[in-house]
Length: 285
Image 1: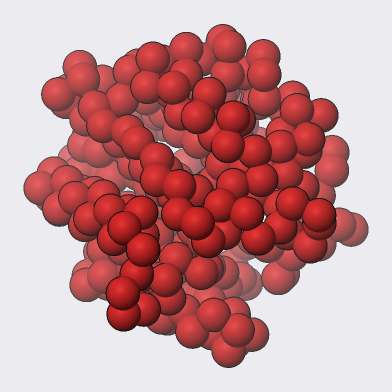
Image 2 (image 1 turned 180 degrees about the vertical axis):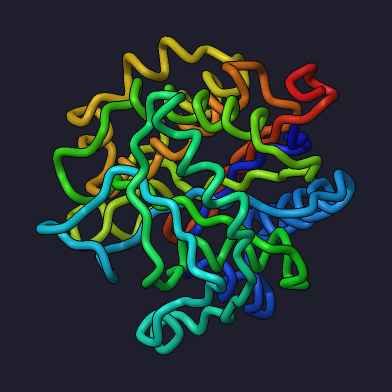
């Protein structure tokens, strides 16, 4: 049986690494960078053998006419981001082997747990994967298993389904025929608008951000699911459905209160949340 040693959620804003690197960055950016360094040390302290990374493709390879709800990448190697993301944002590349045995194990256990994963051997990982990985495991020394979720192409799965899939992945990890130590990173965000009238704000809906982070800190799963309807998240910002990846993470944590969580609100675009669950919260064995 594999051992789940840490569960972690952070943002994947492609602007964030560049904001940190700028001389004289505003205090909220400096504080967010310190938060993420704390998260890096936290994951390293639990000594994972591999990382399951849950994120979403931003219409770089999966489109409105061909969008799997939940997909496991099982190629021998993952690398990214896409060239246009490097040109636009200066994002650092990331390369990692994929733990094919674990990827295939999830695919085999999925139907038993009520999840019919799609799978692919032909993909790249975009900034939703590479940004958090460069923050949390910059050494590129651990194999990963990428899981892609659909938060871009309606109809997307509802919040309840994201939560249930998270619970199912937890059970799959418990049944994997190995003694590997597994860390999980889920990459999402809070309220954000791209190309619309709310773009350019620190958050397109700070009230949504604060409320959802308070509910996560309280472990109030049912209220989060009730309030994370398509209409509500789209009202908060036109790409806010990425928040559902954090709902999935709460399922992985079995709805428990996180060991650590918080959010920063820089003046520039996008709030910067973080959350983690570990043995200190009684979540993991």
